[in-house]
Amino acid sequence: MAPFRNLPDATVLTDPDALEPYRHDESHVLGVLPLAVVRPRGPAALKELVRLAKAEGFALVPRGAGTGKAGGCLPTGQRAVVVDFSAWPGELRVSPQDLSLSAPASALLRDVKAAAAAQGFFYPPDPNSWESCALGGTLATNAGGPNACKYGMTRHWVLSVEALLEDGEIHTFGISSVKANAGPALGQLLIGSEGIFGFIVGATLRLTPMPREYTTLLLPVKRWQDLLDLPGRLCGAGYLPSAFEFFDPAVLSELRAHGPEEARRLPGEAMAILEFDERGCTSEPFLEGLLDLLGPVAEGLEVASDERQRQGIWAVRRMTSAFLKERHPKKVSEDIVVPRSRLGEFFAGLERLGIPSVSYGHLGDGNLHVNLLAAGETEPALLERQLMDLFRLSMSLGGTLSGEHGIGLAKRDAFLALSDPGQIQTLRAIKQALDPQGIFNPGKVI
Ligand code: 2HG
Ligand code: ZN
Image (cartoon, rainbow, N blue to C red; front, side, top):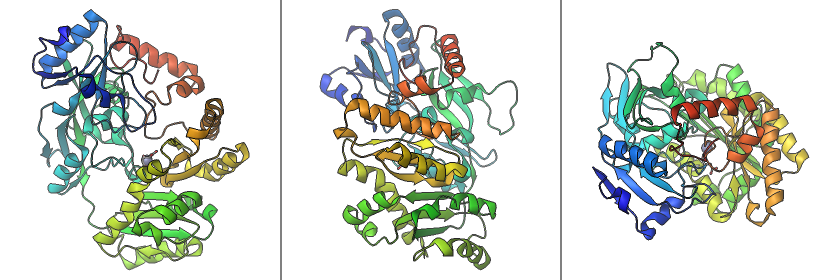
């Protein structure tokens, strides 16, 4: 491919067979075949790529490990070059003094978490793909996960970011300290921007001491509606779970009938997984108070007594997305949010609107994976209507159409149709200021 022949410090792929995988991520949408895939190994490659993109009029589409759920890293349009950051250099460095960790975008989240843990620290963001996703992707999409209900999302753990901007240079936003107030936090604008303003190549992350004890519970319930006010009731009683996950009756019975061994023995009409990680959470008084709260709704509650049991409980939760996908390959899964206080109204709304769906996910922060299992067999216009009804319902209750996966390609039309026009205008004005030629991931988000 002629324009890329002299690209310094990069690997360039142009063989169609090698390009094909770049049309996919973990979402249900499909990208086009890119012109090329470039794996930069240093700033010189990025500088030249930006120059070429402007001169030749092609788009640059960033990619980490391709585990995104919204199509944000998929090429679109006529001429797109995927910038695959998997070979981007850099070391993982923990600073106990600063309670921080710096890492390149290419680092796997698994390795980031392990490097922190090796020195007694915790980096909380834990999307389901944490063992295979790249840090850069988690920053670009502001990844969430079960721990978000106590610890917040990726953006709450970023001290500074290094990003490629449209001048072809890498700039640093923020410092290695939680206190930095010299003007608006421009780095935060890049977190969750899905690469439309520039590409994140590295970051310094905030750490916290590693929890030393966990209480992990499997909570089968007799009546699944009893779960819906439980996150709020726990918080009201001073219990803040580090994770509160749930499976509705339909998901639980699929798991029970066709899931792995550990899932087949699961009791109850529906089920939750609760975890606590604060100091003292394994003490008698803590557990007694908790069991007083949970007892009346539970049907045969189990407390993990060792790390192996804890991991067994989490294994069932972690495989749920892949399991449902395998059973219903054309399903569409959403990640809407409603405030915890409106969960009951949300499920009543789903029923009223006749949206044929099953749900599981992060009940503790109101972020639900609503799955339309029959999406593949549903007439496209009807499916579209069902999804828009779902998004409108979430928004009418003070929620949003994406809690953790982002907008990307998958939700772009809905985002544009349902958002406050002032918000879209603002985003477009920022895009125009930061990327006047529109080279960074066009056609995503806005
Ligand atoms: C999870 O929580 C992930 O398991 C994936 O966010 C959810 O497949 C999904 O929609
Ligand atoms: Zn999730």
